[in-house]
Image (cartoon, rainbow, N blue to C red; front, side):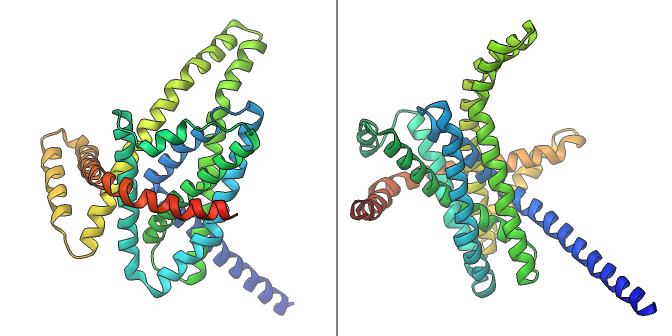
Length: 325
């Protein structure tokens, strides 16, 4: 009997350790995921455009295809690559983060440039191309979305990896896997809800039994275009803020602390002239604002490089592979 009790006690101890490990993984995953908030917001803001123009019945299947591809990228390619970096080349994480931060700045600045009327000639030519086969168009849209998601997912996973405290291999793997699943569910669950909200509103206007319900449905239909525009603005701002902050923080990690210290000093000085209860919020807002401005400046400087060198090289490489396939 005593042996059985001892065994049960050992099992209980193992269960407690396992539960504590699960709590640690969940906590670390939530913290790491929050660090990647800017890229996550942009991912959620960018994806709805890929279902525009399709029949409502195809919207959710398209989102599911993109979500499945995103999760595959995170778990099969990016997670092992991140663990290998953490184990054998931790020094490379900061430069890779800065490279991703530069990409976010470029993307954000390019969106602003496009909004102000500057368009790539090759992009305009691509927009005038008409594809008569809806199935082919859907496949192209999904493929393009998964490629874009791969870059954003790489940034998310790298940010998450940098935010995870040093631990065992399996703890880091489990935390990164949890981040991958949580973020994919959050992003594409939100996207699915967003793209179907106008249909929900229309359904309410047609089937609601009360005037209040029908009015709410009409309000949802009218509100959705404003929400989509707001998401685009928020996503662009988040890209510039996160990209700029990654660059500044990365420079500090590589030994150049000047920019980080100057920004901190300015934020503290501005917060010092505000009511005491607002110090923390004002300091964060000023820091994020300066990071965003720096991100915009860097992104604008990178636009000519991207359009003249990187984009043609990307199109030549993947365009040639596509034709061969």
